[in-house]
Image (cartoon, rainbow, N blue to C red; front, side):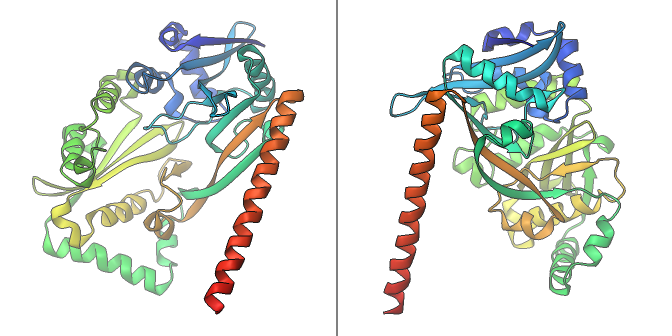
Length: 358
């Protein structure tokens, strides 16, 4: 295996056909690290950070790729982290063989003279079982769809209370509007601009967190939607009341796997929960779909997604330590620190419980 670590500006020189082939045949599907997406991110996002691209080759063939950033801990310890920019919801590496990732990570740590690499927001075993067994991980789950022939059955078999509530919310919106459910493949609307205006008119716009309110984020998405390579990888779904937008969601699709990355709703219709209705209709529209997996990309704290979506996908945030002396020492110190924090939390909870008993 030949490992190369490129500067962000040199990513454009990676052979496009090899990169696309790797994305298509990778054991991990990750649209955020595909060529059409990652190049746009490198051009506009986190320009103040030292982002590099790790590539691996075997017999001249690109077999692995993921971006990293070089950072420094407050104690002066240098470390690497797989790059998770603000618009990235999965950090699985592109690779033909996950079992090769352990050798790739070791080589990267050696070349960068670091002993720790953070692996944020990755799916289980995406770096291979050997790496997984040598990491300290924090995991949670987020909503997903894993069976697309049973969506209707799933909604029918929900607890009566949930089923009644879902039907009530959907019917209430359709009773007070002439709402129509549309998807971008069947509609020629300027979906991106409609979504940007809708999101910017709501709380995200007021908080400065909408796509339109952050110039570099707007430029990133604008480049995505101009890319001919992304034409079959981006899909919008929306609810429209004649010419008025009620809610829009954005999905990325790659290798028959979907990733729901954005949703926004019209706050003028907030009492009628247009975002919730769109979420329900999106799921119902998936019955019998050709997709093999759909990731909600939502926070594990999102109660709406956890309540509505039929399955859960495990997501991990991990630390991988070099097996040499420095790495092993840092791993030991980290485990001790974690143990001390846990003991302190247990003591605090105990004291708090005793206080309430009094």
